Length: 464
Image 1 (cartoon, rainbow, N blue to C red):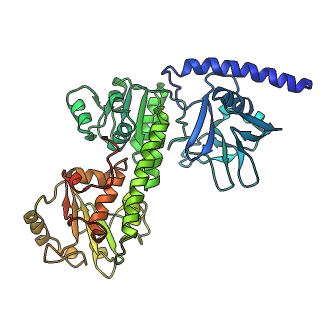
Image 2: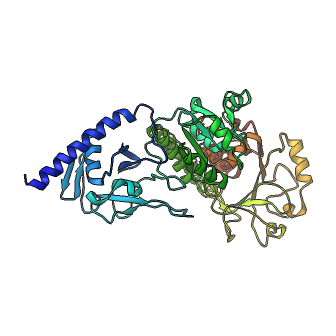
Image 3: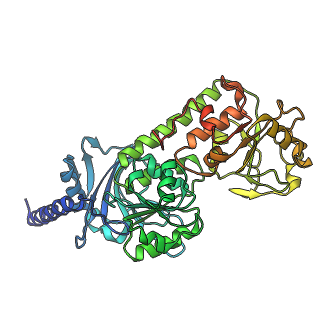
């Protein structure tokens, strides 16, 4: 063994010993603040390992990978500066081990993507990046997401015991991965599971304010070691900066523009809580449930349908265009979003003229509102009082039993307004409304707090 190699080996052993000592200390519920100085090892399919490098002076991607593999007892083989094999997974022509980095966020930056490292592993310093990972894959693949919507790593937060949620969707996600008992604060609109609302009403957990205006003082009062919010609200990102400045860990998940981003939020939340394996079980279950619904519909042919989802029956309503998880659900149940042709994405307000058949084909209308019909008489009355613009759509029929206008209210309305783990249940509910011929079930013209009576295929991942 030549002298440089001997020196490198000695330094690696010193680094390894310090890593093991720190890791033993770090796994006892102590969390790393504001992202972590860690290395991620990604085998693909959400199978990841990481090592928390703590306060090490200047760890690099070479020594850190050696330390990580020794800690997890993974067999590691190097070919010079390149990884040739890890735990029996061998680099080849089609797939290989590569070193990726995410640059630290710049001002007003909103996208944070992996890129191949420009440096050798020894010159890739962990602290210079938002995240660093060794990943196995081909040219099309990149590692699993490792930073939140603000560019901060969510790996290495340990096992937080006091969690605050800033949104109902975040609350449900936390509970789905087993974190209900760790909640010490939520926004005032988090009402599911009901036990969370009861705890807040009784003062056992802190009311942190509204969804759009979280209270920094109330959050701090709860003494959290992790706060979880959503990118859908600028106020959440704003309060995240303040919380991080006082040493509180924060996770900001994607706003939920499609089903994939919801599944990603589940994985991010579980990882930040130290229960990534549990999160993968939940995410895989949700994905499987949605695929089951899609399969049932695809195996029972039906005529093409154009569906519109509206937040009211006003003449100028807010409707779902493309770029929403509701629109993604329509795609998965094999129907067309009537407003997907609009140049704007997300939830948009449209003028009454866009409800006319010459502009938009509306074969089926789903209305999401707080209060709606609970019986056939109320349903008839609503149809009778519809604005003329809605009565001219294909969805309307004077005979209420032939009308294709449906309502999601109360708890069912919550499903349609929260990009959370119950998305598969919403998929089943909407699927049974507009693809009734594919299911052996009665017509669902309105669903509210009783929506579970119509759910028979998918499961509730929040309450199990």
